Image (cartoon, rainbow, N blue to C red; front, side):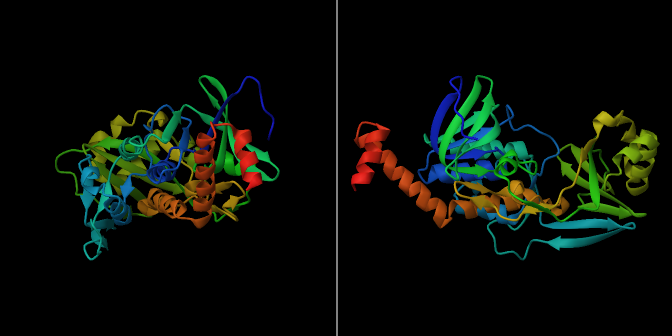
Length: 357
């Protein structure tokens, strides 16, 4: 789409990042830190959304360390585990041991994703060339002469047209950016979905485990301070069938795998207390085109197993910030920006000067 509207507000930046999740926020911070003008567009008013990935792997701890942020990062409320175990048919089995890792923090952290994102935002806002636009939802991309040159978004103030030297799609597994770019999505398929809910912790509850495997059922239980975030594994597209059997039947199934929860099942009052995660595992055949790059779930939606999604999204952001192509685009754009300032900010003077050169 390339049409301009007289009712649209027009903005310009070097890098426009669509989506304020882990990939988008970390990349925005890294680029701003490197001197690049960045605008992050986030469709929600804040980062507070429950049942999002909150596992901080040792690899992410290492990134925080290398950025000089780990000490401050670890002051945020979180839990850490050097070992992870599962309960298999009533027997506890240790399946993960982080203590042998040669990293700055040989442990897995559990931290609400909104706290992580707010921490990264705080770091990014130290740089004047970083800007985040909340409640700004991208509806389309702008394509001119075969190149992506920006996006069109809706905000409380109306339609916004944002021009950029590079657009980064970090808007998740249902990415509007990749859809509008026509990227081909290859689905690996997933045999499961997950029902997420929370129940309070009580004295005498078992220690943290990664999951409970009993009687052909699987329950993931993540300790978050004073409550459990629970994930009950169901067959793919089996939610409606389970729902038709009734809430009491579901509670019976939950108690088979986690009987110690019996005294708090009444806190699940209706299906509104349960969040369905439709598990998607896919990847793009090609992550980029001229003027556009997708990373994180927008490029490769991950299984929720092990909480790898958030950590791979952050790894994507680090890798993207170091790509030679991105560096060359930004170097050219920064040079033009500096030249524009020297010539009084007139774009036509800049283009004329570059042609003469």
